[in-house]
Image (cartoon, rainbow, N blue to C red; front, side, top):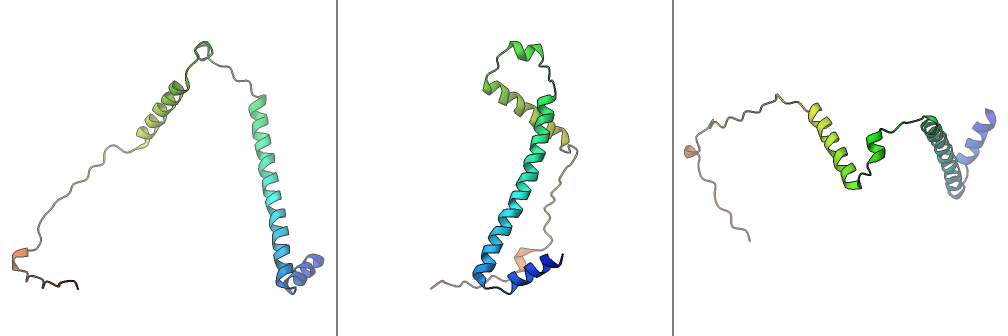
Length: 114
């Protein structure tokens, strides 16, 4: 633990060029660790998908749907799901009442622009 503290003290007291180099090196190392963990997670997720046996329904296997039909069916199901989640009983009432009389106000002076 003392070695790590000494390393950071040495980097802290070094010149700016050395600080920039260590910043880049440590940033790349941190990114590599994060991306490695992310890839391991994706690999585990896709291996579960690959190992799962999904049986396609005979209707889908027999018909060859076009890309347009697939996207239109997906869009219909998404819009139906969104409509189901939106509240339907809300109502907005706007009442426009005059709470002052504009006739009694003094007119504003006209200022001509230069």
